[in-house]
Structures are given as C-alpha cells and as structure tokens.
Image (cartoon, rainbow, N blue to C red; front, side, top):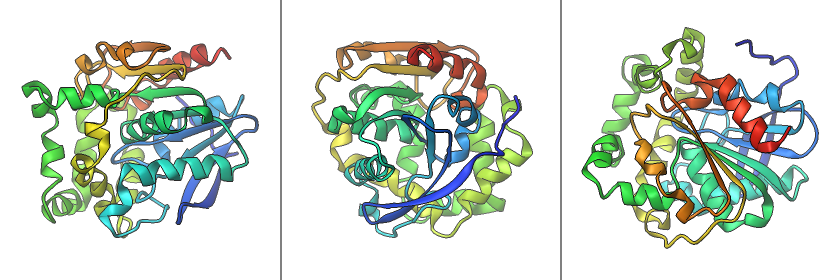
Length: 287
C-alpha cells in the first residue's frame, strides 16, 4: 500500500505545559489520532492520507515520544496529565469537538478522555486496547497476567532502559515486527523510523514512565460508568499482549458500541491490515 505524504505538515502546539509535535493533513472537522508504545505519529501513516479527504487529521506524538517534549518526572505521565494534553490540543487547534482515534496507550488515553470529556467527542475509535474495566478484570486472570509480563518488567529501575537501548535498539524491532502476524507490513525503513524515535534523548525513560504509573492511578481501580459516545473497537485477533477475551461484554460499559474483529492480525492492526481498518472506520463514520 502506497503512503502519500507530500502534503503532510509537521507542526507543534504548546498545551498543558508541554510542546507537542504532530503531523497534519486535510481540512474540516478534527480527527485526532493517538499512537501507542513504542511508536509515534508514524503508526498512522496509512490512515492520515485516507481520512484527510474528509477531515483535518492530526496524528500526535504523545508527550515523551519522538519530537514532543519529554518531561523527566515520572509524575508527568499520569493519566490526568495525558487527558489534559488531548483537551488542550483540541481547543488549541480551534475545535470544540473531534473524532478521537487511539491505539494501545493512545487507546487508553482515548478511553479516559471519553469519560472525562464526552461532550468533546463526536465519535470514538479504539484499536487493540480494551475498555479499562475489562483490562483491570483481565489482570486478575492467570492468562492475561502471563501476556502482560512486560508491564511488571517495566516497573524495575534502569534495567528496562538498558534492555530497550541495547544492540542499537534491537528490542524495538522485536516488539513490533517480532509480534506482528503480517511481518511484511513493516519495511526495514519503518523499523529504523521507530528505532530513531526511541533513540531521541529522554524518550525511553518517558515511554517507560507510562507503565510505571499504571498501578498508581485510577485507570486500573476506577469504578467506570456507562459511556454513551458512539464507539468503534477494531481488534486484531492474534494480539500477543492483549487477549481477545478482553473485548467480551464491553457493552456493559459502552452503550453504543460496534466491534470489528480482524483475523490473522496482531496488535499493530492499523499497520498490519490498513485497508480493512480504513474500511471499517469509513463505514462507522458513514463517509
């Protein structure tokens, strides 16, 4: 699949005390895209040109990643701050609402934002990240605890940094391409782009701080209510980190929900099966 990038623009916005980098294309209502670990805006390269036909697409570098600011304090990466970043980006770009799209950690932030500011969302699209209540329940099962072993590794000081940085960031390649079902989705240039982003000063500790805060915040323990924002979940069925069973009974928490499962696809769903992801997104958005 070709990636059209001649009209992409690289911009910066300052919000909530940090300067955030983003790539944008198109005009119209705002579609804001939030990436996961260990990625950056580039994970949306197949979606940006497609949806720029209809929207102002903004693919953000989350704080701590790539060309965005990387505060040193672990407390800078709690969910409340990440939600404030998104709120500030939407308002700073001159919008009062958006279609919010999130994958992995970006999905976690998107879920939390939807509960905090449902009035600011037209629609919510989540890729391979379960509802927070379902994830919390999953962490009480032996099966998901085994899948989530890396979360506990990342709690250790210094060792995770050394592991991720060693051998020219070879762990980044193992995390992404090594767990993909469609390994051809990632060219050597794609992997180099992810390694280069991770190699920027302060990026690895910042990326790990997302995980080091995970057990200290209400994201895990909160009593979640019913979300009424129209929501689409897209799920690669062969995710090695998050079991498909985590999507079961999500309607307990989301009243207006569609789920699209994609077989023979791993965690990196919008990169492994971009045409199908784009199709499901278009159908959900009725465009």
